Length: 172
Ligand SMILES: [Zn+2]
Image (cartoon, rainbow, N blue to C red; front, side, top):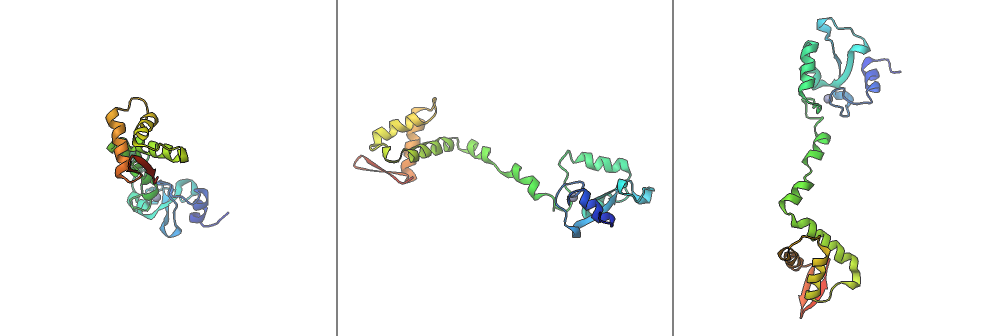
């Protein structure tokens, strides 16, 4: 077992900050006495955690009651006030796949149509008329005529489908 308290606590905490659970480089690590030494807290492992220096400085010699308040105010998403612990935690929230769908509900159907046409290989519709009825068959039930015609237009305008003399060619 490591002998220095900071190394021991790092080992016990799996190298993560006690508060924000982010990987803690040793240069950023410091030992926090939960019951502050200034208030008579013991210097034993049972009273100590290793955490980001920034949060240690913030907590300082607050009473246990005040420290609890700080921790509880984070509502389960504790971030030490140094920014180091913020990146990994934020990403799932920032990633907006649902927002994209809301911004343009046609996107999902369009990808569905393109994927379906890709799968058809040489069995793709050869005329604009059959392409239109094929698209109508691919999209989910309840899609309006205007909507699947718009999808056909979009295939043309994006260059995925080209029409010459009523013959359809694909570059999907
Ligand atoms: Zn931290």
